[in-house]
Amino acid sequence: MEIYFVRHGPAVQLSEEECPDADRPLSDEGKIKVRKAAKGLRNFADRFDKIYHSPLLRAVQTAEIMAEELECTEMTEETKLALPGAKPKALLNFIGLFPSLNRLMIVGHEPSLSIMASYLLGSERSVVEFKKGAICRIDAGPEQAFGSGRLIWHLTPKMLRKLA
Image (cartoon, rainbow, N blue to C red; front, side, top):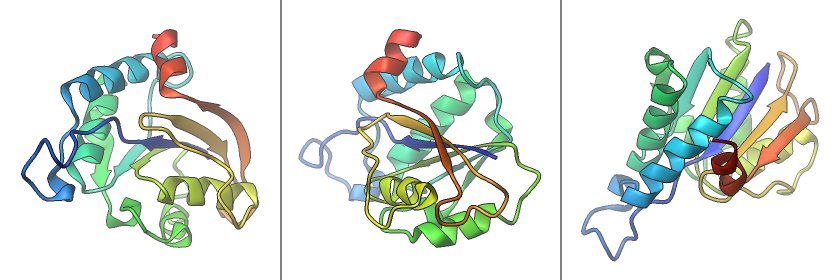
């Protein structure tokens, strides 16, 4: 299974919006950056079997833009297992319930994404850093067990935009 970990794009600052953190949207610049990153991603992957995303607005918007650019809008689904602070084993166990998925995207937050990616790569501590809008591809077997993953690539948002 190809697993693409995507950190949400740049969101408005809490001081700019008078709303709860969960409702912070992507900034206008963040929307543009995510769209360009998605266009860059098309050089590597153009269709996904499923896109799971956190219920927080900035992750929802990131997933929607990715799905639109990659022409798989019907494949998005919200999961609380991608929220900040979620346990990596819980999400990976959930993914393991769908062995027929070949290409999967998870749109979430730090530090959860780093912890999940590092877990798959066999590290108890975070060894992968996700800037806002970064994407990492890890290939893993159907069990998504500790250390079962293989890092294929990790691209910064700037790299992805240049590929667009």
